[in-house]
Amino acid sequence: MVPMILLIVIFGLLLGVLINAAASSLPSSRMLQKPHCQACGVPRRPHAWSGLLAWLSPGRDCAYCGTVVPVREPIVELLMISASVILYLTDPQFLHWLLDLATVSIFTLIMIIDLEHRLILHIVSVPAAIYFAVVGSLDSSLGVSRTLIGGLIGFVFFFLLYVLGAFFARWIGRRRGAEIDEVAFGFGDVMLAMVIGLAVGFPGVFGALLRGIILAGVFSFLYMVVMVVRKQYEAFTPIPYGPFLILGALWVYFRGDPAIEAVLGY
Image 1: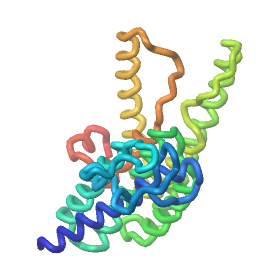
Image 2: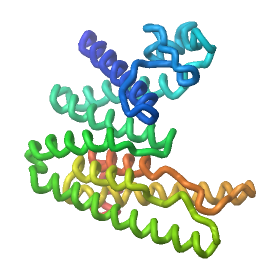
Image 3: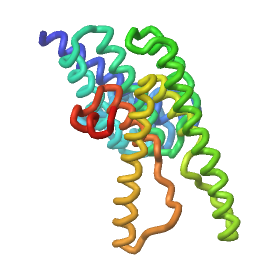
Image 4: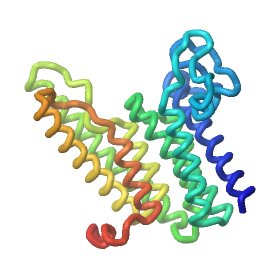
């Protein structure tokens, strides 16, 4: 048991390293690169490829410019180690563990990039959509039709929100006499909604998107209240929607809390 848990921990750590490398390189180069200093671009020393190991050693500073490895990296690696262990202890069947961990990894990568750059990259969402379409189609509890219908519903619903948001931004811009660059939903959110629909299928897509929208609304309201109290509120302040949609997706994917499921009717 102990050797197996150790392997599970190591695998989670390696996934965390891969996610960090992708989150640091894809937004700028659209290519996966080796871990490098975000300030000067110099490749890291091999023992500092892991943010967690770098922070536990003297190697967390760049050897060339002295920039510290972002604290996000050890946090993500600890998160993936925890997810790997928890998912294994919950369901030790290798295939189930691997598929669930892949789902957490994909959504974690999308969430990090959206939080840091307010981008949902097609280079991530398109392969993710293909992955979930294949896995869902082979899953006896979903099948081809429910998987694809879920993806279609997610795409169409958020595409309509995307179009309405663009029209609303233009209308407000005309009234204010200044163009509004930010919109409530970008096309990346549309792609993410499709990915979520493929991941949870039909009718799970409704519960996932509803939870994401509710979570985003609650956060936006609380954020607005705090900013008003601090007298720093600005209208149309952009807030990444992706992380909330992903939380809603994971909530449904892992079946959520039974009491809340009953209240929300799913």
